[in-house]
Length: 216
Ligand code: DHB
Ligand code: MG
Image 1 (cartoon, rainbow, N blue to C red):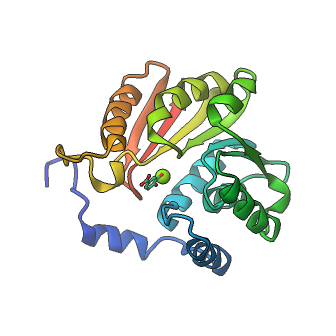
Image 2 (cartoon, rainbow, N blue to C red; image 1 turned 90 degrees about the horizontal axis):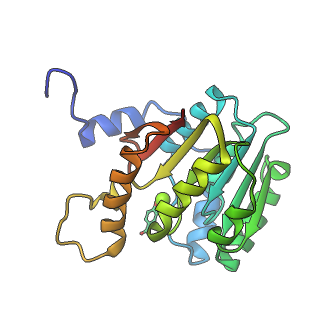
């Protein structure tokens, strides 16, 4: 332990997780069904969902853009933190994942608050105008994270929130020999994010490392 910080160990993590609102049966069932449908088990953790919900509420977020829907877990979690007129617009490139997510969103408690946008985020994002979204959550192909950040900075309003998943590169951030290009892409992205003059940001060590930034 340094003077300023207690290093978070697995034991600390278990401790805080045990004191965080657990996920409900619906999201648990969604994960089981998604895994059975062959969707990779790479959804956010319940602790990260809680963190994001708190941030969305604190920022009074109404309009959220999500890049990478996967099974819809995070979209549903985020939509639950929005006011009645809030919307999550979530972009998904895989038709099969979008189908699954739409099916589960439709039977969720936030069915009217999520819109699944099918297609490549690189093509969908430029259609959004400047400075209006209250929050963005980036959680898609790591090769395009820099591009997604650039678009997010354009689309999000001042004092809006930019959250980015996987700052710890699937737990392999410090594995220099890792041949997965996504790991190197995350490292480069983290440096890019840290150097953004338009953002006040920090990696929160929840889940696989969640970047939280506010647009100045
Ligand atoms: C992977 C992607 C993610 O967004 C994630 O949260 C975990 C793993 C992956 O591509 O392996
Ligand atoms: Mg992720």
